[in-house]
Length: 468
Image (cartoon, rainbow, N blue to C red; front, side, top):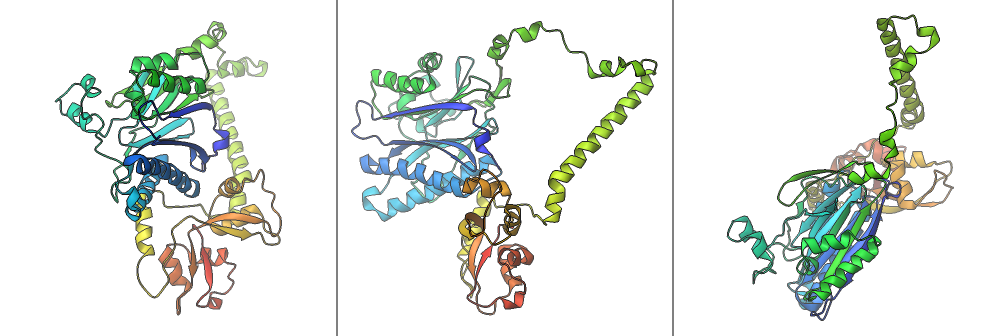
């Protein structure tokens, strides 16, 4: 799981403005930190003053709610699932309220995890990366004019002046399903790189060169965001203007790596890292470790072959020592507590499959969606590791959700615990059937509910179904 508090190595700034022509700001943006990483979202609503503003706000709020309660091993899966969930909510509300009928929104979204930026979009809001004083577009607009460019009917330079440039071919909330485009590979930023998420109210007013000039400025990243908005208004401000900037620092990557909207793979070596520490280049290279062994007095008379063999013995002993430490600190504790690894559905298909199972009609009550958070009261003598084992989730997962700084917990303390479902036993239903229904081990169900004898389980009893 992403330990996002340990990964924050960026500053960010943002700005949104109604512009000089529109009466309402239908853009909406959000930034939050959750179990999936650091998340940035920018939406540009459509469907009238009320509908457009509602669509963009509902989308951002539901993306946040979804990602705060569903963890994904793969950030790409998190992006797709969150946007699809937001799409379903916006679409449902547009059909329930006539005033919101036909509303929709674009979305561009990024997850920062482990020094990488994963991104996805729907519509013509964009994401860029600014590296070594040059701006690169990463997303390709889902728009009518982009289709004309792709077909070779117009040049890219003509797109901004085309009379139908505001027509988009894909949007969130206008139908029950949405096609989400995910970046083919994550951005690997180097120091001083900037990732920009924005609506077309910015890119429709400013050229790449004008944006580059602002991003090259030595002011703070927040001032850069505000300056972009100000400049877009000075150029006319015909639309709402929104942007979020992410400035990276102290990252381990020496080169920026990303794929542009034209499918060009870029690898840009950061020159700034060299010039910041010129003294490193002047140092003589360190002598290899082998020479240190060779210079020991007791080994001077050994042959080269003997020294190689000795070095191999030392390496093997070192590996065995490290293996022992790993066993003692992690594996042995896991074996002693019968820890089981967590396995949660991470793809959209698995979420959809589970929802279909949930609405199946039979004698048993429907299963609830996965990753349901329940309040659990710590029992006497229980430790965090035992509770994690009981419900089939990592200790770090529970600590993050409950904001625990260490493993210390007390009797009767309330903890938020993720489970697959809160299930009521149907008449004549056995534990074997319940375990098969949720695809978990029967022993896991018994352990999670402190069941000693499965025959004691009666109809009407509520069971917590563990993740695994």
